[in-house]
Amino acid sequence: MAMIDLNADLGESYGSWRLGDDEAMLEIVTSANVSCGFHAGDPLTLERTCALAARRGVRIGAQVSYRDLAGFGRRFLDCSEAELRADVLYQLGALHAMCVAAGTSLAYVKPHGALYNTVVHHEEHARAVVTAVTAFDRSLPLLGLPGGMMLDIARTEGLRTVAEAFVDRGYTAAGTLVPRGQPGDLIHDPEAAADRVLRLVRDGVITAVDGTEVRLRAESVCTHGDSPGAVEMARRVREVLAAAGVEVRAFA
Image 1 (tube, rainbow, N blue to C red):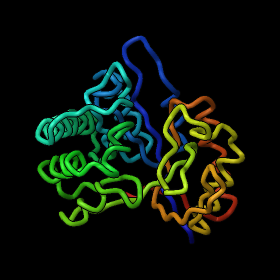
Image 2: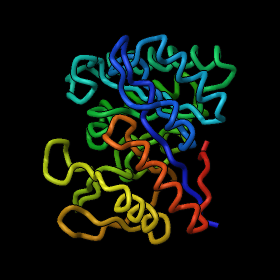
Image 3: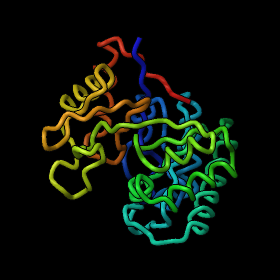
């Protein structure tokens, strides 16, 4: 039987500002990429999100980012490798505390936003993420874009790596994500998204924005909790996968 993990970015509300419907998403997904306070999420939000995920049996991943709260972590920061390593390590410790308080454990690590895209090709920043994880807990898998430098470095360090694809993001012919703000960056139709994920799981192929057929194998697919219609899209993806006999379960 084919299997896939369904993850979402959660815990991104801040104070009185609410982003997404974490409670509804946690009824659908199998893994939650929970923000660590550097791009979004205040301590109370993170505590509540981890507690709710634990009650739902959803695995929790630390979604580490650049220190960019104002920019939602979507801006590149030209920091040193040592600075970024310390920032990632700090974030891991923070979310680990919330997991322990919720009676669960941290299951994996995934970069967010600009950091996610940067570690595909930026050796120093990719190495900073990897060395932070190895210093914290070598058993934690790293989730990222297939073919990226971070996953290559992680494998050489003996870490488990998990290739990820996206439910609601457009792809270039090179297999990278279309930058936000460019044509085709986001997919809004739940049916189109669900059909694309099913084809990915079955055939290992995804269609890029220019029509190129890109070969892609992934253990997990991500839907963004802050996108319009995120709950509807995640629910439809899970329904279509279930109807096709695909088992949706956490990779970690």
